[in-house]
Image (cartoon, rainbow, N blue to C red; front, side, top):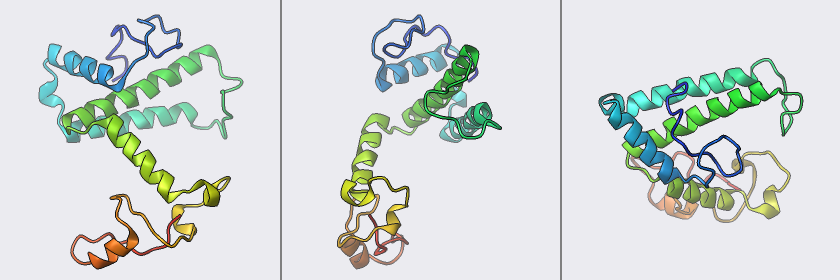
Length: 172
């Protein structure tokens, strides 16, 4: 997007970006992106496939910000103001394309993200996973949970065409 939404007028709370100063919601960004595309007659180009490919390109640009820097500690010590600003621009590009893609696919991104966090909390219980970077398949529990929310026992009963290939595997 490279600056495509400059001047939309809202910034995240406390960001000091010179915008409206209020807290920004995903819905606000979704509406602004939709309006932005409509005003430029760009909706014709915003198919899910095209938006996904644009998103991947922006993730590549975001990756370039960190390329050759080695491990970067939290807070970005030693980074200049312009580097941090550039990082913010690339992060914003990724976020805006993701929001636009979810809009074109009729996915409520906020609800989907909260649901995914709930599923992850079940896959990674604090008591077993705290301080560990191991994948959920490393941990053993009596009940497994898949991304569709079904228990491992349910998955085994429903085995067959389209069944989850990881069904029945031990998960955190």
